[in-house]
Length: 152
Image (cartoon, rainbow, N blue to C red; front, side, top):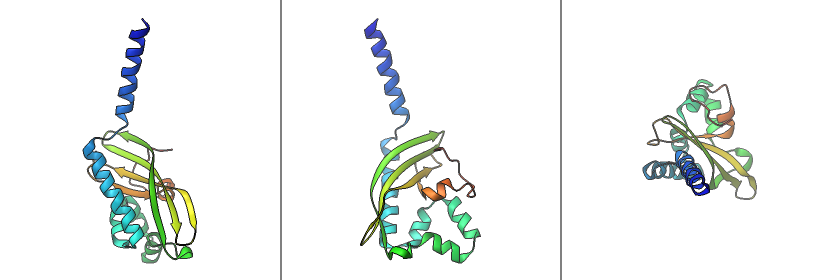
């Protein structure tokens, strides 16, 4: 009886773990896009950062006018040049083809660490073929419409 229970429990546990993971192809696409996003930010390639940001965020800030649009996506001038590094996986949620991953990254300048637990989200609407990124403040901003938030 105990062996049967353990076998059933381990099978359910395995299914639960598998349901929250990505396939090798999905993981590869996500890693490629995440590296591109972080590299574009760190190298100051503003157009590439915008291209890798979720379209709903781009549309929202574009509607605010050129000045606010550029200010939102460019480097924080308080620290001159900022960098993202050491992305750490913090969780994943999915609903159908909608996949969302939460990461913390180190956010720093040449002279100081700004935030060692800065949150970014990776979103895919097509089952993991394409990934877009959002900063925590954009993900949490309910004024930005056009994507479903799976994380509370």
